[in-house]
Amino acid sequence: MLMSWRRLPIDTTDCWSFFAGLLLALSFPRPDLASVAWFGLLPLFVVMERRPFRSGFLAGVGFFGLVLYWLNIVMTTYGRLHPLLSVVAYLLLVAYLALFFGVATWAASRCQQRLGLPPVLTLPVFWVALEFLRSFLLTGFPWATLGYSQQSHLLLIQSADLCGPYGLSFLLILSNATLAALWQARGKGVRRAFPRIAVTATALLFAANLGYGTLRLAEQPDEREQSLTTVLAQGNVDQSLKWDPAFQQRTVDIYRRLSLPAVPDEAPELIIWPESAMPFYFQEGGSLAAAVTEVPRSSGAYLLFGSPAFEVINRQPRNLNSAFLLGPDGGVLGRSDKVHLVPFGEYVPLGRFLPFIDKLVVGIGDFAPGTISPLPMNGHRLGVLVCFEGIFPELARDFVRRGSDLLVNITNDAWFGRSSAPYQHLAMCRFRAVENRVWLARAANTGISAFIAPSGRIVAQSPLFERLALRGSVGLGARPSLYTRYGDLLPAVLLVLAGWWLWRARRPVPPAA
Image 1 (spheres, rainbow, N blue to C red):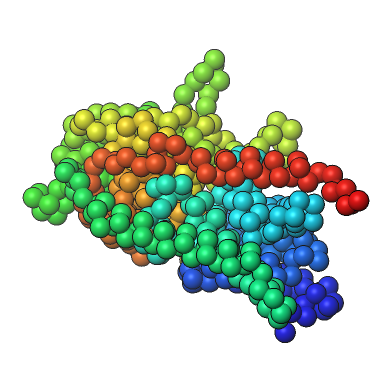
Image 2: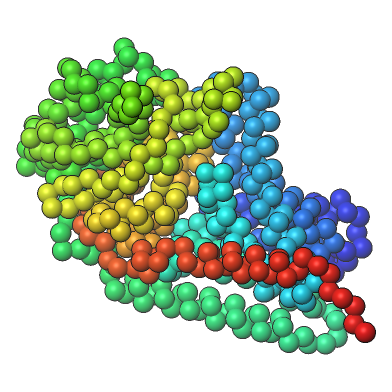
């Protein structure tokens, strides 16, 4: 039946393309059907030849439309946008992201027509190159990079310490393209060599990935000589109350009760509170700040917590989304400021030219970006990724390269409600641990809080929207990895290769004499 798709009306082809995007979306949390990613794009790759850009774009609309449905919750419930405006903004973002799918299929088809390069060769290159481009273009939005779909398969994700999530993205697209090439070769009466080569290459790379994962897990990557008993306090503070001055004392009391042990012998060595857990300027002092400093003094533990901060440069005040680290004596050991801010969430891009646009979330005003600053703690260093920063591999890598022995992700995912977004966010953070072979502790206001081992294994995690303290042990120290040393070398090379192919394909191939 599929062999006749080219002769069917274009709307049927469009439906298959859109369906492929929906199918691919099912591989992400939730429902987290990871195996679907290995064949989900088959319908798209079979039908894309007729209208390559349109087919890819429609697949992208289906994919991002389903994966990012929760954006409407953020914009209407917390951003106070009219539902109609929310839908418009959501569709605009989905359309922008779908362009990357459309360009990938268009570029592969163009190279086939003008350079004679088969899609099974070019599609993985263009796909990964465009995923990489999406990670930094217009401040970057690498949410739902295809490799993240495999986050629940520990064996498969061990190769993230070689090339991040992009190696898996390459292998997944290669698998889909190979299946499409095999399907299209059916019934033609001859055996073509290239599908056999593609099948062999796909099988070998898949086997190599499995073998590497088995080898790495056998080396017990989670064990460390030193460890810290850690408590993650999940305050579950309602977003509508979080920035209410009348609720500040109540907020401090909630976190104090979660952090101070009932039995002195059970005192942790490190206590972590989420992003903006203290919704006031801690650095200004006062009774609320004094109540916070009493926690490490009473417990004898280090305390890391999120709080807004400010600094004045050239008489201009700057707000910062920060994390403070206090020593057991209550003294401030350091402050780490968020580097990668959320557009329209923490600042308005081109705000001087768009004064009529306000932030989508309630807070203290526009924030300014900070710099990579690991926090010193008793001879070790903590690398703090604030909220959205957990989805950027290069930030975690920079922290580890600067000596961080433990990565900490503090976040407030209350914006997402009970959607799939908190699970998607956690899935991406798992890769940060594997890439740099380092432990990661994650404290979230409403969940999901978790301890993630360097293998990507989730040692413990909390449910959503429950007030609790999650206790566990984290290892200290990062083991060397190729990714930590060289970063995104693979996608950068593929981006150059993709550009070279497109440059060569800029003119039609002259007809043979």
